[in-house]
Image (cartoon, rainbow, N blue to C red; front, top):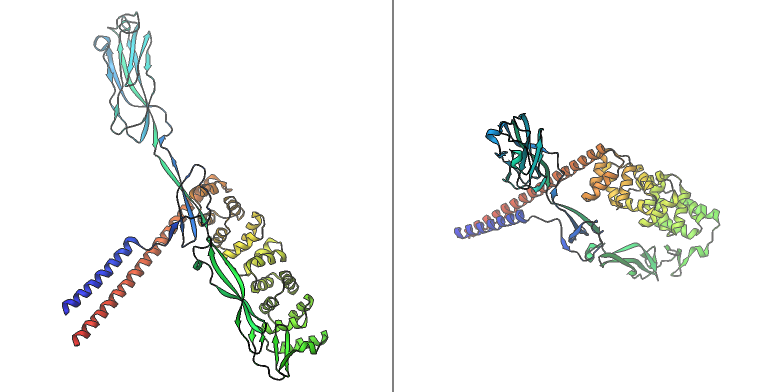
Length: 574
């Protein structure tokens, strides 16, 4: 029995060890790569690049095109000629050395450079003797030249030979000699038996670095909404419940993914069937004599088991309505109930504004009242501007209204056209960076105005980087924004790094900034430093995750061992 239990423990431990090995071998992938199926349309590869891969990441709803450009290898720029090897024959005499060929030492080449060669043979006469001329000869593997000279020191060179890229271990040498004038292609001249001088043979070399083939890559991307319905928002009831045909109804929104885009459809649904009617989106209790209730169309009183509109029976002049308003202020009505009272007492814009001002409610409750009135957007703008001209209070009112982002953009554009005031409204509304970016884009201003708004938001450099990235600008617009923000080199580096540009686009952006060459180089170094720091942070986080997983696995192993030991003890007792 004990051996059998030990086998079970060993099997469990082996299973866990194998699991740990699989994790560290393959890891957990943060991406969910799927084939590209025209989910969206990335920009095409830049001129000179070719597409090498297309794929999508369903975890981020983004598609990518990887582009590649191959630059061929070749020789760089050649330098000036120099003499790395040579030979000098001092004390050359016609008696002993006429016609003898002298060679330089071997010159070795390698494949890191390209080469050009030419040989040169020189003779400097110390004593002519009876001669007055000689023939000078030089040669290498590719060319041979002869020079006939009379009564002068002279040189002879062969043509320049371009070798191209060198071969490791290969070597080259050149040779030269002095011959009697008459013993060569020249004619005439006296024997040089008594001539004396100095013979030089040199190999002239020019080098150029060999440039290897280089592959440059860049990536283009685009975003799409969804791969399946679960990627879209959840289906839900929206807006407030309301009464229809004395029952409770509410608008229902259904979301779906079609052609990689999220869409929705709204429909009015019956939520609850009421027995005694409906008021304020809630079923009411059966009618009791003299009961007063509030419905969508006004206040009702129960008479003879039938609810009748009070306002139809008692019509109050404005002064008495004001007294009624004072009475309402003393009662603990909800915002919905106060809104209903306003609707019942007046339908004019001026009347609604006066009543909202006179009710003892704070600015947040004022916004809730405006939202509950269910008036047009133009009417909401009129009410907001009439209630206050202070930017901070207008921002609170806008943020509390039940309006979508497009309506908020319209409201901001109508309230003020001044960049600084629009920036203050956006800042006070406590929006996400994504919403802030959509509002700035939606205002349809010049890119310089966008930069002024961003600058007036009083964001940190990291926050500015997030916001600019969310705006999804073109490269030219990024350049204008960064120039207009008047950033330091370090701040510019942070923002450029956050834009996640390709190497080519990043280079273009830096060159177009209003910076000196030295500042551009410092900016490139700062960006590289940011990238290295980011890599270190990512690596540190990965290590933390690995340590946590190891700890969890260790706890699981310990837990399994404890359970197995308890089972063994229980069986031993039996």
